[in-house]
Length: 169
Image (cartoon, rainbow, N blue to C red; front, side):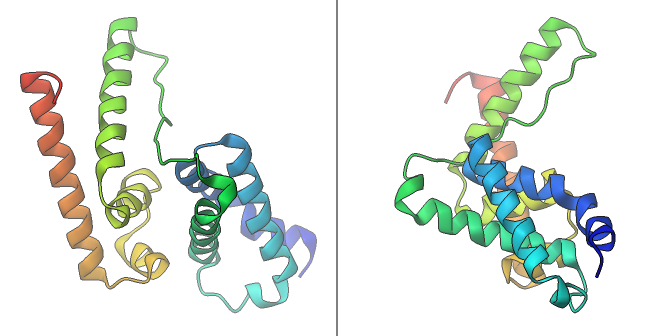
């Protein structure tokens, strides 16, 4: 496989790898390191890369595993899962502040979810993977992914409704 062929396969999803790593590791530098590590592993195993039906799903699984290993290591004891990806510059300042506040609440709610639900929400609602790909990446069956996603969304909706209706809880 030539370098150009490899880049044509990997480059379309490298940003997703970075976003997942950033989501899990918080630190931009750690996420960049994780992305580089995953891409280097893909490069060093490029002879096997054609064996995989879905290289993107395989690389996302590699990213998830690498980040979990990193989080378990002593180097990453101070890292935590957060989400601050979105900013809309075309709206008024008030709407930007409201949107930012809502995203902060959603991030806090997501942070309080069980680990499996956090991952399913990240992969489905943020990275926009389909359920089969998520099931493959997380080594779960499709029904378990749907149940985890449904429970996570219900929890997020309920807690956000309570916050919006009654104030800070």
